[in-house]
Image 1 (tube, rainbow, N blue to C red):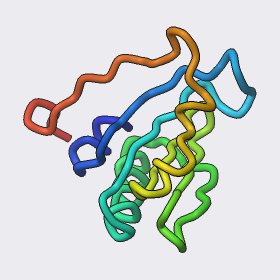
Image 2 (image 1 turned 90 degrees about the vertical axis):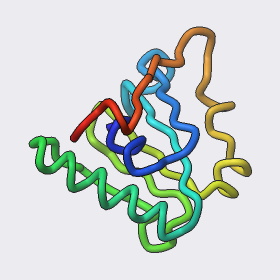
Image 3 (image 1 turned 45 degrees about the vertical axis):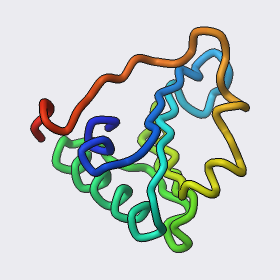
Image 4 (image 1 turned 60 degrees about the horizontal axis):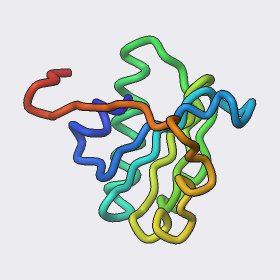
Amino acid sequence: MAKVLDRRKAEDIILLDVKKATILADTFIVCSGRSTPHVKTLADELDEAMGRAGVERRRMEGYAAGRWIVMDFGDILVHIFHKEEREFYNIERLWKDEGNFLEYEGTPETDAE
């Protein structure tokens, strides 16, 4: 999922292991888009790519406004923020814990879809 977002130019992608902190999900993926249309495009592209991979999205909230979209894929919640909302809500501050940042190293050039 992070690679799909990366290829679509999502910014500041982080992965958080939250399974010890909440029953909501095991992992949060958090990223930013540059504009409302970009945020919506990231959600659309991720939804389409996951559908092709056979991974069903359970729910999606916030799409109409396009400022903070939450996509529920079961064990993974994806938070796609407009840059301003991400700075304001700063959910990383709420969920980060010592050692729960997961490694992600993807580049659009090396990870073909």
